[in-house]
Image (cartoon, rainbow, N blue to C red):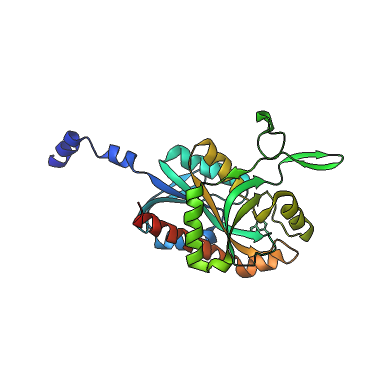
Length: 260
Ligand code: ADE
């Protein structure tokens, strides 16, 4: 009775819960969030369309963690549900990628400054013409989607602490619905788009976050070099790369706690 009365008088309770904002943490695969789920205190798990949203606290920060699945469709669906259903202040995508830039090595980290969809365009008799973005909105040329500069700086600092400055890069991340295992295509990603890394979800996260006006960053730890050896390299280094990216997220959360 006293509890009910005090809730009625102060008008808090549900409202307080509604006002709490969460940091959204999204990945494609389990091995990209295992460490985060191990370290988090999870209060509740909601399942929407077969995707789990783990709601809780991680390194003192309120978080919602989800493994949305591989590729742009699953990433877009997972992030849209998250941003629709919960109050999210910012989004961190964590995961692995193929290294594209010459100076990247396996287990290096690329913090995305901007994303693009490298497989979005027109297939003509003269070849592929890149038209990333929505042609309906008049994007005649391809378009890049910028990450939030403050989150990029925070992620970069965190990555330097986790893997060292010589293994940390900032740059363009190219997204497509293909696991790239081709030297020729790596050359194209470098020359046409100035890409540092390639993966399969980042641009989808970017487009939806931009539409929802939610700051975001994409962190990628390299499991392979997107070349003929990419699949074997991914098998050998995928788990370690996924863990590295998660550790960077933990470091970011610690920094957010010391500079709220
Ligand atoms: N994720 C990890 N390695 C990748 C690659 N080579 N291509 C696309 N996505 C990846």
